Image 1 (cartoon, helix red, strand yellow):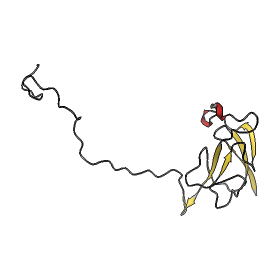
Image 2 (image 1 turned 90 degrees about the horizontal axis):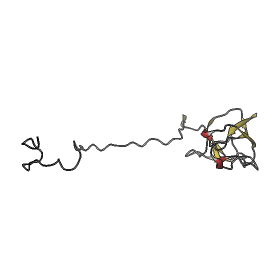
Image 3 (image 1 turned 90 degrees about the vertical axis):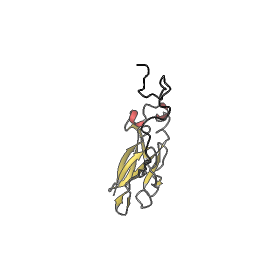
Image 4 (image 1 turned 180 degrees about the horizontal axis):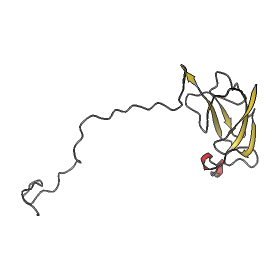
Length: 151
């Protein structure tokens, strides 16, 4: 049995309705694809094992219902940017966005973020002070010792 599920465009807030099976394993809706995820069109086999998510083009993708009313509007979804406004002639802003499903490999959930790169800090000893001259020489030509001077 399938159910209508709504998502909003992260660019302009336009709602999209997609028929989904009763079991949902949604991870996120983002304006960019997650690295390593495979996306299908909404008319493709969304619930198959080959799909890691769905790629929508706001207001233009077939096989879904578009609602021009704003799902969410504000600076957090680009609503203050005039070029992201829904098209007055149609529905949506025409920008792509991505519904990503939860993925598992070897029984563990895959984190879409890349692993941190280990950095080794150079163990060489550092100078104890700044580079450059040690200071002005004293009146007797010494390099700043306490053998006399101004005071």
